[in-house]
Structures are given as C-alpha cells and as structure tokens.
Length: 322
Image 1 (spheres, rainbow, N blue to C red):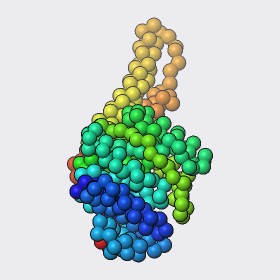
Image 2: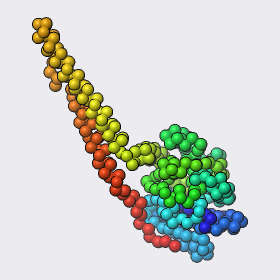
Image 3: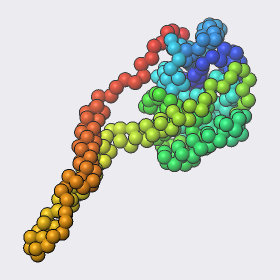
Image 4: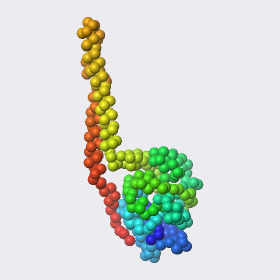
C-alpha cells in the first residue's frame, strides 16, 4: 500500500464527507493505493455515524472509535498502530489542511528519502492570540530539540516513512513534538514543506490557552525522557553526588574552622571567640544538602529499576472498529 492517511477527529460531523471525498479524488488522480483511517476521539455530535456511512460507500475508509475523549495524541498513536501504508500522512479533520499537498509529501518521502516532512503554514488564518504564542512555542522547541530547520512543530499535516510511526510512542499531548520524538528515536532526516492553511469552514476551534502550559510541560518531559530515559541515574545520580559533595564540603569547613580556632587559642593563649557547629546556619544548609543528595541518588537508583520495565501508557477503550 502506498499511503495511509490518519485523521484524528472530534466533533467534525460536517467536514468528514467533503474531506474524505477530496482525499479519494487526489488518490485516484495519482493512482495511489491507499487507506483513510478516521479515529473518532469520543465525538458526541454524530461524527461516528458519518464515519460508518462513509465506510459503507468507500472501501478505503476505516474507522476507530474511542468510548471517550482521550486527546489528539491518543488518536494519532492508535491510527499509527493500524496504518499499513509505506508512507503515512496525518491531517486534521477540519478542512484547514489541504489533501492536494499529499502527492508532493509522498514524493519527498519516497524520492528524497526523508524520514519525516512537517508542514509549515507560513500564512495562517488564525487570530493573533494563537499565532504569537505559537511562534514563541516553536522558537523554544527549536532551541531545546536542536531541530533548527522547522518553523512549525505542531502542524497537523505531516508525512512519515512507515518505520517512523511504528517506532515512536505518542501519548499525553506529545503530538506537538512528534519531530522531536522521531529525532530521539534515531530518525534524523527531517524536512519541512510550506503548505496551505485554509480558513475553518465548519465547527469551531478546539484551541485553548491551557494547551500552551501543557505543551511546555510536555516539552520538558520529552527533553528529560529523550536524554535520560534510558539512563536516569546519570541525571539523578549526578545531581545527588553534587549536592552531597557540596554539603560535605560545607560541613567539613565548619568543623575545621572551629578546630583551627580552638588550636590557635590553646597554642598562643588567645581568646578568639567561636561558636558550636550547630549554631552556624551553614551547618543546617550542609545537612539538608547531604540528605537531598542521598535522596536524589536513591531516586536515580529506583528510576533505573523502573526504566527496565516499560509501562504500557497507551491502552485506550475502543468502542468499535470498522
């Protein structure tokens, strides 16, 4: 199979017939063998009824329905698991992504041998309350990930080689960072393509400002897991050793200072005042640093044990599969 088109959707009942017809038209014009995988993320507007009807009239349409809303990452991860095409295309269901971009995305994956091509909506039809935070988010992600050639990490229109989607795990709200996940998995040939951003025709946006907070937290999570996920002791152990050594040095200095003053008083019959170690505020700082160092070291040890037993974070309640 040439192409699998994975479309996560939530309450997009009006756009689905037009979207699937458009995709099918593009596929027929280019003689692609294909499938359209519609993943209904717990819609309550009758979207699944439309998916069922579409699958009855078009054998290339497949559907997966969640019992409740899990989020876009869950829908993508489930769609990736089902995809059979050599090239996997993802796009949003709201008709803001154009299926006319598919042939060029497919060509660049198959001929130019990219692992992943991410769309860049250079001209956006979004309010400034969305475009400005998006630019800031993309700038931070570029610096933290080291992927400097992407302008828009969160564009829903992307193309992948099949091995990419089969070797990454998308959970939480990690769909924003799929290029970063791909890079950490060893797929480093990542490119970008300017794509059309169409004005929303039906429904309303699912965008909310809370997504930026969640997105930033997910970015920190990806950075940590990608860098230390297989060796957490390197992070926690290093921090623990530094804290322990710093606390120990301060404690030794406090004790040594007191002993030095006592020695000088005895040797030269002086009366230099000194105070007990426990009366020095630095003593308690050193004590806390030593205890925290032990705790961080033990955290690293436990994390090493946990990392050897991968947990299944992607088990979702699926109501029906077509």
